[in-house]
Image 1 (tube, rainbow, N blue to C red):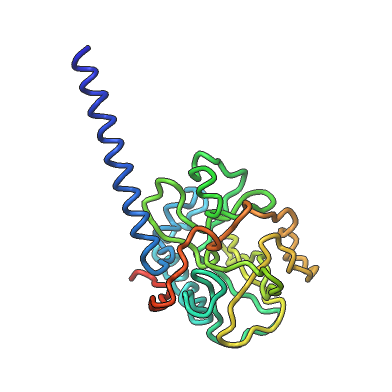
Image 2: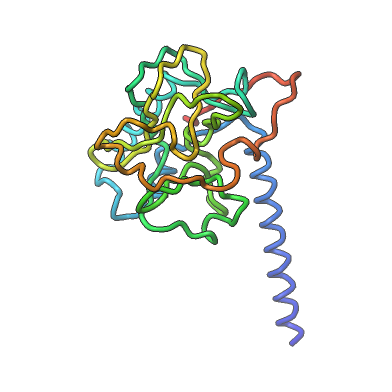
Length: 240
């Protein structure tokens, strides 16, 4: 009995140590500028049946698409409505699409235990038939996120200028932002978390049916500390 009690005590101590290390790692990740998912992050999160055969080709295409998105937008804490947000680097035309390859669609309902409970309600977006992962779940090794995670909601009389929809790159569905009104260079990209901005009626937007609010608060509106006025603005980084 003494040996089993010691083992239980050691196991509890190890679990507490691991939990504290994880807490510190997540706290450090929140303090750092936003880091977007790398190709291998998304590759390992994919169900094995979804993974393309040639991982190198896929990773190259993923990186090119992510770089193209970051040529069009910047994730920054400067001149945004709250915390970090997404700002246009160029004028965006109504009707064009910005594709976010750092998102990942999962079919079926999300498991609250896998996500990490209500504290992680902002880590995914519900959709008809499944959900989109846009941020790390509890226990994920990669403490990174999708660019979509950093889009602030249009509130306080502000009008959304993009709507969530999806596109297909020939291998998988990818979350996309459809521009619903012209966006000027330097303007923040804002979305309706209920999908109310989508009024296109496009056939390819049919999967917006069933979009709904992920929780009472979504995105960076409540969980990311707002930078003090004296803090230098930070921008998104992609690990190389």
